[in-house]
Length: 237
Image (tube, rainbow, N blue to C red; front, side):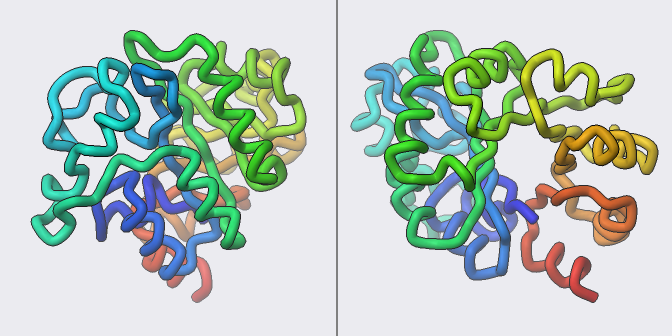
């Protein structure tokens, strides 16, 4: 079970506070999102723009890493989180290394994204010895093609919303070995097909207990949820 942007029901998404809560609540892994700053540094933030989750304005790629880390990434969620920062991917990796957590890194797109984003992210994952604990995912499936060429040893998964016909065929075409579908695009037949073709399948973002239970019955590899403690309670009872 992966915590979507950390325990994002309890703390501001994609912050160290949300990641720490996910660990405390028993998540097996964390899902997070990565953009690059103006100076090419991988940073952890979901949106291409800053307005929703920080006190900044504009594209994430218009600011240096230092400028992004000076922003308040917590107050929008609750005043008690004032001062939470936009994490650098490197600091998250350093923290994850000291735990047993798995990590799902979603690569995002924005105007001005560093052209060597793949290389920078792979280099960091390798430097922290997390190759076997990371899965890369993206809605931009060209990224997965590049990642297979660059680092075939790191797992890659396609993100998608609508149902795909025989998604395992398409995944193979773009060099992915995992499926990360929106949970409503998943049924028992899809799960059986994925497993029969040796693909891992991790639906997102699942918070309804009955849906979690059904997906588990079908045999998904993992679920991605905003509420790790709730999901753990469902999966263990």
